Image (cartoon, rainbow, N blue to C red; front, top):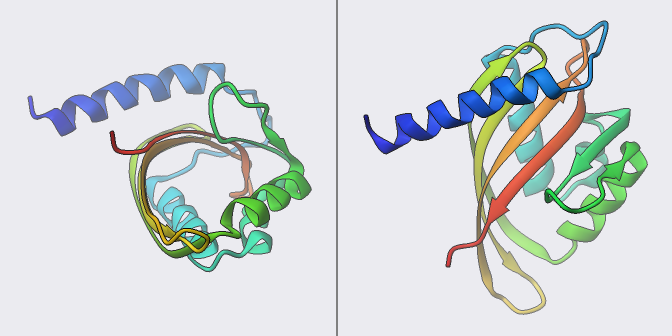
Length: 152
């Protein structure tokens, strides 16, 4: 089985586990792959434009955004907006790409990659990561968990 399919299978199994552990949202609907891809397109636009207001608008008022597994999450739109304003301030020439891996119920998993330059040093940065996203019935994100890596 090709490596990509093995990874997709692993992510699908992780998604099933994440879905069973995700907080129950009584009014949540199933997210579709198309809806997740559309949300990721808005995330891409917000990041590439370095627009913290546009990014925060993708989340519910009480959403959580966990950038790394051991870090406390950013809480609420205000916390997410503040994080985005700080983290993107030094970024330039951002190129974000994403692919939906799986959806189940109100949870979606996506692979993403980004390249950017830092304004302060001119360094080129490459990132590769995975999102696990939970959505409410209106299509806003209630929980974002991400894992990302830099090349070795």
